[in-house]
Length: 355
Image 1 (cartoon, rainbow, N blue to C red):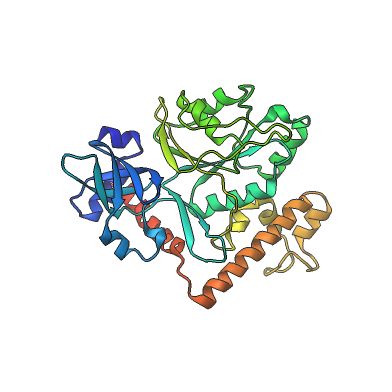
Image 2 (cartoon, rainbow, N blue to C red):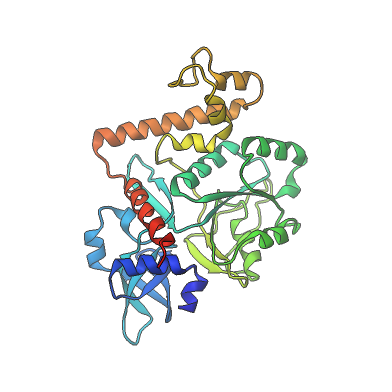
């Protein structure tokens, strides 16, 4: 079990595994490549496929294994291959709604402890987009961390830091430059062994470069920025887990071209803490923060305590999730996240229950 412990297996997961009551070895999905998945087991690494039983029993694609999942694996004799028989209940996840109008959720990764949201300090910097990633973390029960790369390209870092600190006062932030080597050692010291850190962000912001530094070797391909606009190019094509020499578990992900929200409207308040705090002083309990007299949120914007950009993004995210909730209610669409939330409560009980 030592190799499993290095990938995050602990007494809590052992209790979850025992509660399943199935005498099948456990493993963790470390990579996704189409219909094939790479898994690490007590006997080493294997390539596995999803069993017909699991495919048939799944209510949606969200129930199928993804990178980070702990699974039950039936290994083939005399071969580094096997079948994934079942998925252990997830304690956390990263999910988005599939694009092109479909409501179905897409689980991007599972059992992540920290979501490392990477941005570049250049003309692509977008704090509104970061808030969308923050919502993804809140909904998936993952702790967010902010990484701002390419600081060497900025001529007004003090202004950038001021905006970030005002927008995300309660979130740990790291400023670095992969090109100049600034801040990378501090990041390495900050990370905790046997914890899983998923790196997300647009293509070209330096996720794979940061991961390569932490690994001490170039396992992920990177391209130089384009001449003319200093923008990086998309390289990572799969979600993969890596283990650093210090025992930190890293998950690299492809850049997301579109991050369609999914989840509950109430989660927006957890991201916009300044607005949620101001809203407690609104005159009306059901204030929409748009036209009401005595709205403390609007007053906060007028006084400069809340930035107009954050306020507009708050309303936009609220409206988007309200639309999704109405669509789900009218179509009866399956929302796997609600089911995983109820399951994760049971996981928490099992993980803290005394043996």
